[in-house]
Length: 154
Image 1 (cartoon, rainbow, N blue to C red):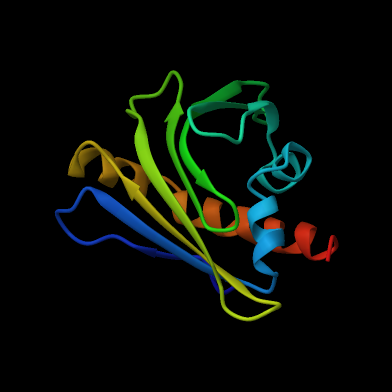
Image 2 (image 1 turned 90 degrees about the vertical axis):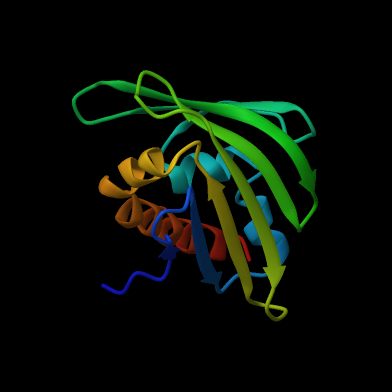
């Protein structure tokens, strides 16, 4: 299966650039990142908190097939409707430090939109650790679910 979510990671840089085109209007793609009920479906997680405002916090919990609970949290530093979300992301109880994420949403046409994610890590080594995981496969699968779930809202 083709990976529609593209990951670009330049050698010796602390960042990852992720892009994905969606067959969704811009407002629906943006909603998929704001509404807890939608986030839970496409991310396969439980939304404990999602405050969509400057300095708002977010907290998600996911239980794996073995019953282990994984906690993800951060702060939303900026949010501009149908345009931008700037947030931190941290996985608790892992060796990964917080990362800074810039999510930019742009219209391609009335029925298509694009997501550009710019993720910055504290070091090249941390970025490379993330890339060694099935990171690309996981985000592609999540974006495929996002497309499938949200297109039904249209």
